[in-house]
Length: 230
Image (cartoon, rainbow, N blue to C red; front, side, top):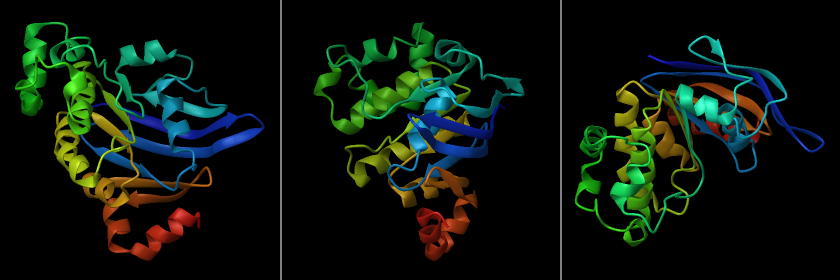
C-alpha cells in the first residue's frame, strides 16, 4: 500500500509562512483527518502536497520517492488526486460523461458504479439536476476512477447539511479500504474523527495535536486546547 510522508513542510504566502514545520504520514488503506480552526493553513498544506502551492521548506515523498520537484500534473500521474473545495462538476455533462473523464473504459466505469450504486440510476442525467450531495458523489466517483494512491479531500461537506455529509462518509471509508491513503480536511470535526483512525490538528499554522482520533473524541478538553493551539 502507498505511503505519503510530509517532513517539516512549511508553506509561505506573501510575507511569511501560513503553515510551519508540519510532519505527518498518510498510510494506504487509512483515513487521516486534518482538522483545525478556519484560517489554520489546512488548505495550504494539502495544496502543497498536490502541487497547487509550492512549499518553501521540508520534503514530500510518495512510497519513498521524493515528489518535491514534480509538477502538479506529474504528481497526479503518480496517483496524488486532489478534490478541492466546492463541487467541481461539469453541470452540462451527464453523470456518465463526468465520470468518463477519468474512467477510460466501460469496464472501469462499471467498477466505479459498483462503488457508487446511487449514481447508477442517475447515470444519464445532467449533473446540474442532481442534489448537492449527489454532485459530491460524482466528484468522489471521478476521483476514484482516476485510480488514486493518495486522495486529498478538502472540505467535502462545504455547503452540505451534516445529514447529507454522513451519506458520503461510508463512500470515503470504502475508498480507503480499497488501499487508498486518504487525507481528509473537514469542518465537521466530530464526523471526521469518526471516520479516521489518526488525526492531526493544525492551529495557527502549526501542529497542535497528532495522535489517534479516539484520543480527541474521548477528551473534549484536549480537542479544545488543540484548536486553541496549545
